[in-house]
Amino acid sequence: MTMMEQGIQHMNEQQYEEAAKCFTAAIEENPKDPTGYINFGNLLGIVGDVERSLAFFDKAIELDEHAATAYYGAATIYYKKDQFEEAVKLFRKAVMEKLDEPDVHFMLGMSYYQLGSLPHALSSLKRAVELNGDDVDARFHYGLCLAQLEQVDEALNEFRQVVEKDENHADAFFNLGVAYAYKDQVQLALDSFNKALDIQPDHMLAANGKKTIENALK
Image 1: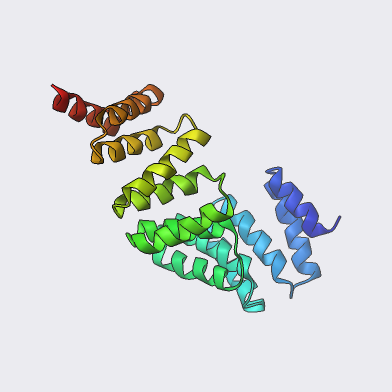
Image 2: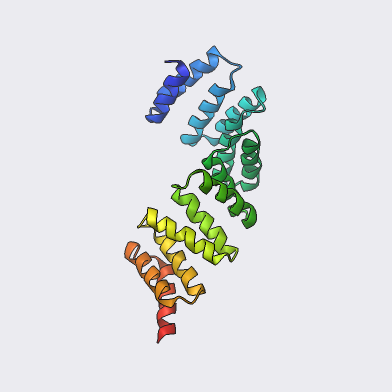
């Protein structure tokens, strides 16, 4: 097993000091290989040393301007720092460098979502769901985008699939309730708000939705 492989194993086992030693050795052995810098950047991101993490990703990109995973790693750091415009730029660069992975499209979609750019978010989140239909989080946020763009029937379909995969997803049940209420399907809306409250009794939005429906039925 190479030093790089040992480092990745240590990182996966949360043995971060040992991982750092292995990645350092790997970089010393092959200082022109961007992979060592990328892995060390990922490690530093995990432990919260974000500025040094960015420096390692920058070094990897300096060595190989087509290093897609370096752009992705740096983008995730900018996302954590709430610098969403920079995150978008780098996630897009990762996609342009052929990193066509569900996580990349999901994070790009979430960056657009945070910026309020819903059509762009919708496109990226749709791609994430296409690549990994079991990603509940991606599907939920895809549904949110559809709902906020008033594509309610399509949003309903996504939220239904979310609760099929995760029957304890209170927010999905709440949004189902909102969508049913929008379509004047009052009993289904009430049932959905009640389900959200069964899962999360302090879900204030669901409680308000339930109260609104019950008052309308009086």
